[in-house]
Length: 361
Image (cartoon, rainbow, N blue to C red; front, side):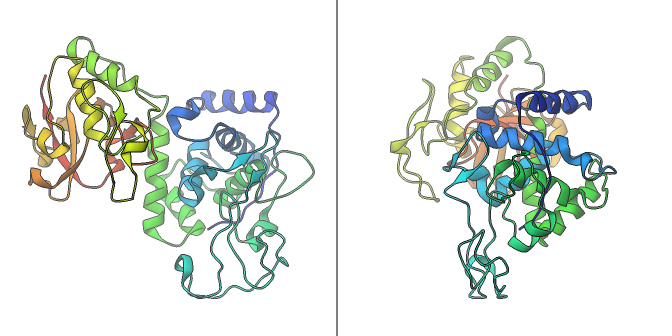
């Protein structure tokens, strides 16, 4: 959890300037909010917050919207389900568990109230607050006015994002250096598992807007078909050769696919390959038996665009495969990742248990 502050203005000219600055730095502008799976107003806050940081930490290098998005994804899932006003105020506010030492939220050390309940509504114990889950003391120490409205609040998307950027930059880190970025994230939350989770999100956001060229022929046909489904919801058991559909009940996390029209991972691959005239089995594990198998030991470098990409609990046992995507090239795949997340482009390293691939064309 983090507490940060930075000043910024989210008027149209400033946003356009922020996007232009990122493009000039070779980072590219932000993708569509739908493709990123981020509410548009939160994405705007990340872009402007990252662009402002050198006004507060001149020596900072490499801050970009993807870093802020990676943190907020883990901390609050981008404040999904909340209302966000044009000025960035989030309602209802994002408030973490009571830090009373009871063990809720993983906390075993009581943290007494420091803000009189101003940010968390609790005058006895602290809670992490806002989309970046700052402790009130941290926000008080670092807060800056991210949207130049004369008010400071961890529950404002602009204030929170700009403050997080300042906090992560420290006294002037070079965030283009992977190890310095890892160290910065570790100061935000002293857990290496947390760091790895945030980095996985950053890596995914880095892939957006940098799609490899679509090849010609049947491979290009199936890739284009899959790419056209970006933003379609995940539905447990949903989708197939004819396109998105409702699914079945229920995922391990409890999603009832009967209430969602979309794709699960193997439903998406079935659909894409059907456009190229190829019929695939329904499940990811069964699809591993189609075509020429590419062993995990050969590494990602053995993959070619259009190959199926598998993930499993044992890389040599097809029966343990639980996920499949379609390789796009340049270390990227398109897939339906999990309930709550739409069809999207991910790095092939987004999941840890690579189990090889299969080539059918």
